[in-house]
Image (cartoon, rainbow, N blue to C red; front, side, top):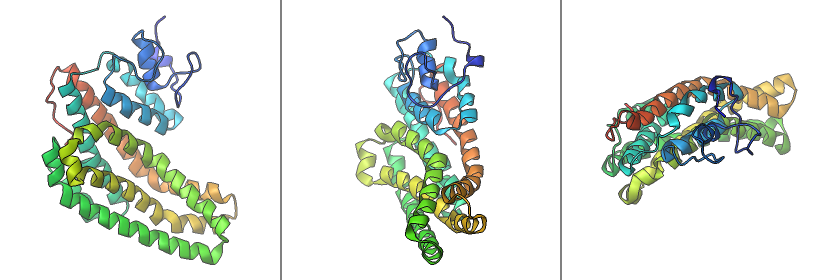
Length: 282
């Protein structure tokens, strides 16, 4: 039985055989392997990225992952090739993903500092990136905390705390939907590549802090608008806050999805070109 990728409809999550395909389950099926979301023939680095990416996308955007199904069959690389791929993922996280959210939060100087870093190809590069990572994380954390304090003061004056909680929950959920899955995939993909040397500097953890804090900051900055909309519309509080947060996050999230496709293409090219030293994202 063959797989007609063009007519396939990818679905979220891990599924039972016959109940629909996630992207990686489709790869296993196409390769003739037992049903699994981690087929033996595929790159383990790209697999972890794809699993989280598949589940984090909306139903329409998820169908764009069909283009990778046949390319992932037989994509498993040598240990050196997989290390190169993990560094591509970590490099994108530090020099593209985090700066995009920092810019969205208005932290332009810190975003430029990260984007201007040399490509991260090894533990020494991560250690050298420590000062820029620490500065950006500190700024993002401060901006986030300030935004949340202001929003909390507004909520205290307008709502009871139970009502305010619905707003905060919606904003948090919208932030995770836009940023959390992609960040999680990158961290999983790049953790091993950081190695003991990078872990001892704290730089690897700092990069993840930047991503999470910048995303939280973007959501916190939108809290005021969410609350104002809730007051004006007097409708479903959670839905109003969710819609407002999603609308504000959408431009950055959309740009990063396009960027993520570029990274996956480059990771796949590592084995397609039989070149274990493919350049990281730049």
